[in-house]
Image (tube, rainbow over all chains, first blue to last red; front, side):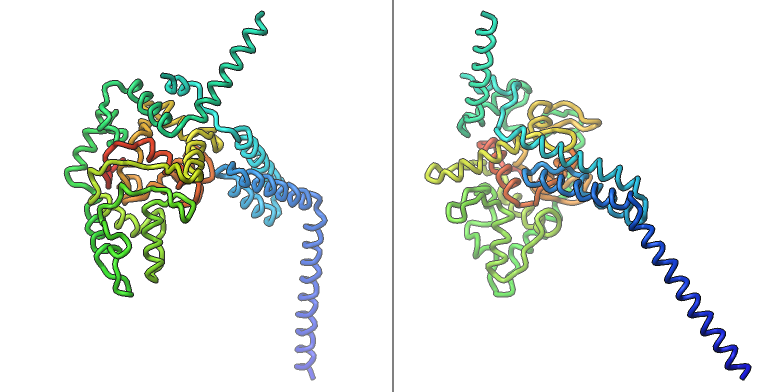
Length: 120
Length: 278
């Protein structure tokens, strides 16, 4: 009888611990989701990705833009939202500049230092 | 009055830009040659296939010492074995390229049927695929051995790239390559021309920038930095990364067209691959 009691107490304790852990985990997830910075990070990363794709569509993507977005995603996953937002904003700006750079040169322009060599 | 003069100058400049942008390939090539002759008057035309060593005396001494025991030699031997070894179906590269192995001067060329610029690495892989073999990677690895052997056998051949007039798409591909060459890209906002035309002979840190004339004559090249031989498109990739632009796919349309333009610019120069560089 004594032995059964001990076993029951052990099971009850384990259940309590599991439930407690679950509750704590759920609370953690909720806290993460509820963090306004998390939503902001997700939004900025999404905008950065859109800017990158737009630059790529005109062959204007820069070397590190995709790397910055990947790192920003990883930082957001770790809950480091401020760092993620900062990096994603940098990536977004790169995407915008890459697009502008390519579009501004849509037409071929021979540089001035070379033009005179076409004469005679 | 001032306004009128300003407008006339602006019109003349705009006209000049348009005129040079629409120049014929032969006008482009003549301008290239004239530019480099003007920039490096002491360098004879036949020296340009030696790249930066045509204009860098100290670098040339080191290069000549390296060339006494060329680091690319084992790759030529290995390439010869690849060339002669039959595919699983019993055929060899010779069946695809009856004039081979000295075929480097035939590439790149415009393929009317395919509607695209065909380079030598692309043609080699097409041969492999047609014979049931897996294609080789375009930047590193065994394709360089094969290219080294073909380049060595093709030494002395003159570059003579044609832009056939019976297919306007050929000129379009050339123009795309030309536009790529003059387009600034990447975070550093450099074009190919920024380094290899405008600033050829100047230093970027410790390196002297090579002229574009002769850029295509010596591939594949053993680069000490790589510790092996690599393809021209691997080098294009490296250049684009250096200026912090996302590189394009090796043997993709952008780099094939750039190769078409650059090779046309070197028409008349002799092939001297494989090469060795720092």
